Length: 164
Image (cartoon, rainbow, N blue to C red):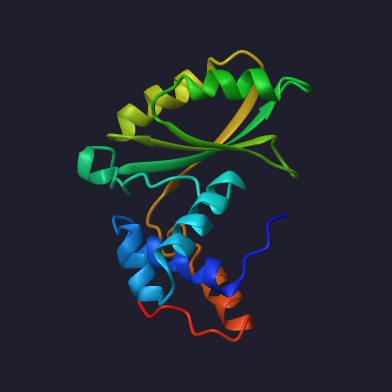
């Protein structure tokens, strides 16, 4: 487990808010040397904390306005194979191995209800998928986020997090 200190948390908050900032601007805003910021970023990348800077793409804006979640029951011992086949379906955005009812939780997108049916049919056709239960997302009241956790790390260390 990689522990973050206050500077790591503040750097990640800054990059979460403005991912296009350069190292020099980050160092200026954080009040530390450029080399310190670069070393921290390199260390966070090596440890897998910082995975890169992909753009945040609004799927609805590119025509995929429908999001659905499916709980899949699969043949025991076939998680790796099923996940690989699901990854080959373009509209499958995430797959999580889960406990409880079902084995995998799949987030998928579609252009319409009819398109969702097509995507579900592809998922059901994956070998070793035994049963599915799908729910359509009506809205996303809490989008994916890490800010509260990073703010807690910075605050617990006695440092004020970077304001939004």
